[in-house]
Image: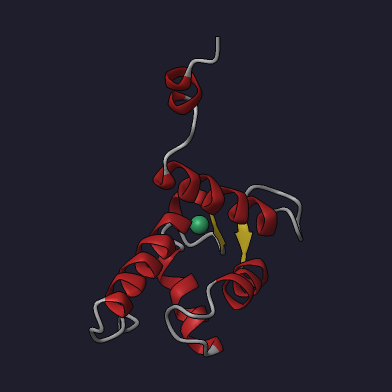
Length: 109
Ligand SMILES: [Ca+2]
């Protein structure tokens, strides 16, 4: 007999699917050049251009500043933990867009 409860309990929630998608996108770009588990500046720039163009601003200097401010240990690559800072900024920007509020501004130094 088919049991609906066990079928649905194995389904991922929307948040679980969204997190899995973010991890997959990170890995998809981190393995480009060099093939590792970190985002180089060029991999990060390509990721932002291709997957997050609606969010933040689309100018290259802003992406460079975003990379610089989220590279916490200043090793010129973003670990997944550092990339989660970018995700939080993109999520905040998306939330502001949904509510019709002012867009996120890059932090000034
Ligand atoms: Ca880093």
